[in-house]
Every structure is written in structure tokens, then in C-alpha cells.
Length: 172
Image 1 (cartoon, helix red, strand yellow):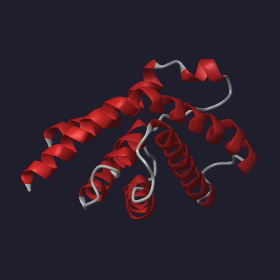
Image 2 (spheres, helix red, strand yellow):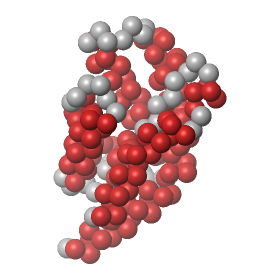
Image 3 (cartoon, rainbow, N blue to C red):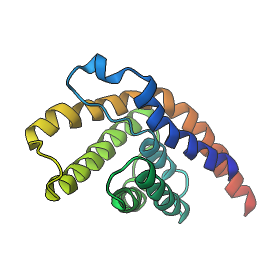
């Protein structure tokens, strides 16, 4: 369980470190790329634990995400458990676990997350960005970047979650 928490904490911190140390903005110019390593990790985890733990982790880290990174308290606290519930209920039951399906899943989850955040921020009138500008400048580059990031992260997370799954099965 400690290994699992450390994996999630590492991914949580990696979201911010990629923004700080990876020169994303100069490479893409006016486009904006938002790393979602924690969301990738959480999405993968739903395939290895079908119980209550993914929802609990989503809620706890949603609160942490709101405190550390977001301006709106409660946004990620609600969003991460919703995404986790959808993945647990509908996607992880039928989807195979391989790199291509995980890349497609990451693209869908990131698009859903960014779209949801844009909808909330736009509804509250805290942004003046048009929908077309959002899609062109943020949504597409973010989805592509996070899908590419999935390639090096996938084997590491798969190994960690397989160890976790074996440890949970050995408890019973």
C-alpha cells in the first residue's frame, strides 16, 4: 500500500514538475499543454483494482489537486471521482490492458477532463476564451501530449500496479 501511495504521490508531483522543467510552451509556441500524469495513473489504476480504493484515492488526491493547483476548490474533488466511477463501471470491465488501448483511454479521459473544466470555468464567466480557441490551443495539444507521455509511463505503472494487485490477492 505504501508503494501505491508513493506511485500516486510521484505522479501528482510530476504534473507540476513537467510544467516547470520541461520546456513545453517554447516548443509549442502559442499552444498550451497541460500535463495530466496523475490522471493517467488514476485511469490505469482502475484496471487493477475494481473496489472502493480507486474512488477513495480519486477523492483524496482531488482535494490535494484543488489545494495545490486549482483556483476553484471542489472542482477536482468532484471531477476525479466522477472519472474514476465511469472508468470502473463501464470502461475497465470491457477494455483490454495494452499500450494502444491505454493511449486511446488517456486521450478520451484527458479530453473529458479538460472539456469539463472549460465548461465549468466558462459557465462561471472566469474565462473569455471561445470554444474554438480552447479546442485549437489547449484541448488538442494537451490530449496529444498526454497520449505521447503514456508511452514511457505505461510500463512503469503496469509493473507497479501488477505488484499491488498480487499483494492484494495474497492478502485474501
